[in-house]
Every structure is written in C-alpha cells, then in structure tokens.
Image 1 (cartoon, rainbow, N blue to C red):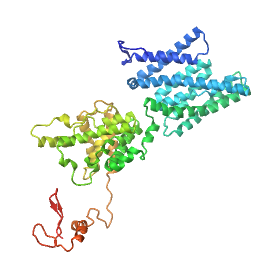
Image 2: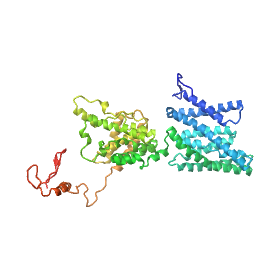
Image 3: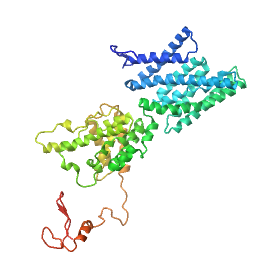
Length: 527
C-alpha cells in the first residue's frame, strides 16, 4: 500500500480521517470490481468500478457517522473490506462449482444456480464480528453488488432479504450450534423469496422452479458451514471477541478460573459476586452484559501470584503486611494489575478483557497505606507512589467493574446491613469515585450512574439480607469454651509429657497448661 507520509488527515462528520482509509476504499472497490465483472469490456469495467466505489464509500461514510470507534482500529476497517471481497470471491467459487455440477446433471437452465450461492454468509459474519447496525448496511451494499454481478434486479432483493435474516438470526448467538439454526432460517427465507418470484416471473415452468427451490433450500447449509469455518479463523487473526468466545470464558472449568479458585478462594468468590453486579447493571445501561461478567470474573486474576497479601484470602488474624512498610505493601497491591495482565497474555484472554484488567482500579490511591505512611514517616510520602498506574476506565464496562469492585469489598465491613446502610454505602463509594475523577475518560452519564446505583443497591440487599434465628440454636455462641479448644490443641504434647508437671509461668505452680502466642502476647486460660 502506498505510503501516506506527509498527507494530512481530512475531516468527515467532524472526525479526522486517516488518508489510508481512502486507499482502502479504492483498493477494495477495485478488487470487488474484478471479482464481479463478467466482461472484459473496458467501459463496462469502468462503470462497475464506479458503482463499487460509490457503494463502498457509502459503507465507510456510515461508519464515520454512526460507528466512529472503528476508526481507531485499522484492523476492523481492513476486516470489513475483506468481508465484502471474501464474500463475493466465495460466491464466485461456489458458482463455478455449481455450473459444472449442473452440466454434469444435464440441466440446461443454469440461471437457477444463483439461488444457491451463499452470499448471505457475509452478513452473518458481520453481525457476529461487528454489530447489528453494520450488518444492516453491509446487507444493503452486498445486495446491490450481487444484483450487478448477476445482472438481475430480483436477485438484489433475494440477497438483501436473506442477508437480513442471516444477520438477525445470530444476534443472540450464544453457542456455535446457533449458526446452524441461523442457516435454517436463511433457507426458509430464500425458499419464500423464490416462491414469490415465481408468481410474477415469465419463466414459471417446473424445470426452473424446482431447481431454484432446491438451490435456495441448500443455501443455508453452505452459509452455516462457511460461517462456522471462517468465524474462529477471523476471531484469531484479527483478535476480535464474539459472544461465543465470551461464553467459553465463562466456563468455571477454564484452567485460569480453576487456578484462581484453588489459589485465591476469597478473590474467586469476590469476582463471582462482582460478576453478578456488573452483568445486571450492564443490561440496565445498554452495554454488553456478557463482556461485563467475563471481565469481572478475570479482573483480579493477578492476585493468584501472592494471594496471602490480599485480605479476602487471609485466614489468620495476623496480616502479612504487618512486617512490611507501607510503601512495600502498596507496591504488592498495585502489582496485581501487572501480573494479571501477564496471566491474561499467557492464557490468551481477549484484548477487551485485558483492557479492563488494567483499567479497573484507574488511578485510585491506596488510602489505607498512604495514611499509614503519613503517620509513620517524618517526611510526607509522595501520593503517586500509592496510586495505581491507570489508565482510568475508557469505556462504560470498565467503569462498572471499577465501581462494583469497590462496593463489593466495602460491603464486607458493614456490621448491620440494613437497606438504608447498603444504599448509603453504594452512594458513598460512587461519589468517591466521581470526586476522584476516575470516570472522566469514559462515556458513563449521570443517568447511567443512577441506574447502576439502584441496581447495585437492590442486588446487595439480596446478598446481605438477614435470616430469622433458628429456634434452639445460638450460632453466635462458641461451640466449645476457649480453654477446651486450647486443651485439644495441646492434647498431643501433653500425652508425650504426661509425667512432667507443667509450670505456670506466672506463679511457678504445677498443674497448669499454658499456651503462649508470641505475636499477640496472649495466653490461654489456665485449666
């Protein structure tokens, strides 16, 4: 591709457009023209090339206006161009196979084979790899190009109707078998289109209608097969994350999730609850709830490396941080983001999930150790040494994960979790995040924040609800006296030295069993 060095970007719909986009349009228009042209006549080729360039330009203009986020990802623009070109190339290949197939069967009317060409597969792939809006405009453009290719106005409608059905049949695709079902819907739509055409077509003989129906019926099989084969390849090659991939990551038997469950059970439980919170909030504000849940499951995977330094994984009363200075403690806590990113690379997590791993703490300050450092040090500590490196959340899902992460952790310190206190906690955490400026780089609106607040409060009230006491049971009472527990702990040492009287360290009198805790400075009651 030609170098664009020295060429200034130009503006379309107030967006700065890289000149490379213009070369994309020209290149793919040329490739599409070569694919669909059936005559070597120069004037015919120029006309087809002009129409292709206009059609592809319309597609890109729509992206500039309604999906400007794709402009930041050159690979997505490249993928979209390849979808046009690849769909038509695959259609030409199947056309060649069908022509030779019908000749072998002795069918003289080869015009019917066009109803078996899997052109609608492109719209299905665009829906899975991009979004519904892009799939609709793709269906419109590919149907025009297909009509020019076959020189048949009816075929334009046939491709458009089938493409729309193909796209929307996989809009909620949760598993790869849904693609087969989508192909079945396309077959039904194609058969209906052929039947409609037959009512006003001049050639309504049985020799034409029956082969047309057969080709239309089998087209769905080809579409499903092509989509099933190409989707994993395109996902891997262009690093695109589909809902199918996200669902596979939700499997708790994934090696990384099993490692988290075994190494850091507290973090695992925390992540599952955060996942419940963010999924519900994501549905309310209109972002991908599946991506939100997956991101929440994996946002703290970096804690696998040193789980005992995080409070949710500490089983003892003595914290590992008591032996460390505040700066070292803050470095360990901050490092879990970097280590999480390394694990994400190792296990090949999607880029969208990696982004949220790096953004879910933003540039928050670790308040506890920062305040501790201020109390212990003569010189005031540098605030940046106690802040996460960022970046701040760049999208709404990252912002939801950040808020949910903080709220779930803070909810653990509520002693009396009444609805009013839960609502107050959610309100306080969200206000703290706002005041700290963590949401300034994402598109979260005040309306979204109010919806998130209501949803989090509702779910937390369900999680932290109280139950009535069971009659005859006092679960807050120790199951055995503390002294008895200590006796059980010391039973084995006592058995070995039963002939030696123990001396009370305070009185020197025999007959007392003493357990000494070095750190706490406490001893068990005398027996």
